[in-house]
Length: 367
Image 1 (cartoon, rainbow, N blue to C red):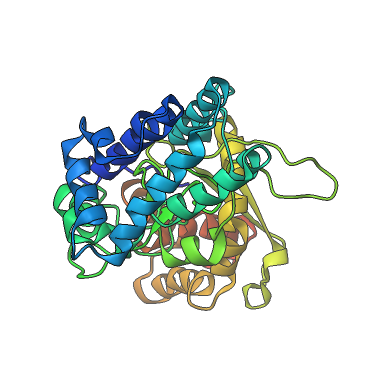
Image 2: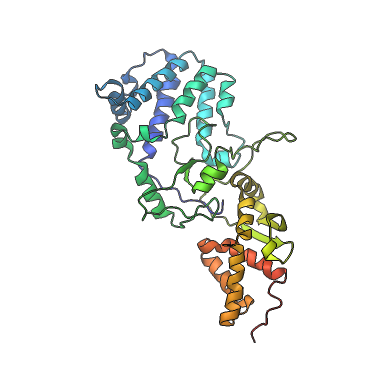
């Protein structure tokens, strides 16, 4: 991740508060033996009002009825659990929502995937999956009774991009993100995939706007917190950039070219070195999850990017008499001030590589 987002508090967080209440104050207390009624929600009047509308109103929407029935069904599956099993679920729930600790691979977090829970509670896992995988859906969140309490995700996005003004996807730095001046918005990626992890599908610390290519083409349903399956190595936990890290970081990129014939440049002719070493593990995860090396090398090989950047240098030499060194000095300042404008963070190391391999040596230098 090239830079972290600034987290933006919003009314939408109330939905996670509802789920917290349902989990800890209703489901986890099911073994006490109390009959499932709306009185279980007395200590959360807003949630009780929503569930009354969904469960008992004559004109209750179908999706609202389903939401109510799923809460009741999971309550019934929690009833026979032992105190030890309840404690285990509480630990899983807490860990899965401590997104920063998960990203840091904190050994104190007992991260739980559906597959982990299914090894012990098959029926309950299936019902939890139905519930949590579909919470983050327009069909539910846009229901009037719920929307009145939690607001709208489009409004959250509008507030989000007014604070996060870089305008570029932080996962690749290449693609623009739709801004406050657009009528549409980017999709939110479930950083810990909702298909793999229960309990955090509506946690906004786990929801991050990402460009279409990062979200739908490269990351898809990859699990960033585990290494990919490998026939040789054992799958293991790993560290990953936390999207809302409060301390900024910067990633260094050095490009090396194997030959100076740019017209024949292919990805195999390019070597990329990333730094700094202090965050190398996070960088390796980021590169794998988002296909970074493939995408950056493709950028350097494309006629509209790498070759065009080189043409910019040559054209300035021909037309304005500016030598390449002057161009690169100017680009250095631009990269320091606006690294993601016009892909300066890629343009600068690529042109440095062109200079290093001697592409500018034959040009007369200005006196």
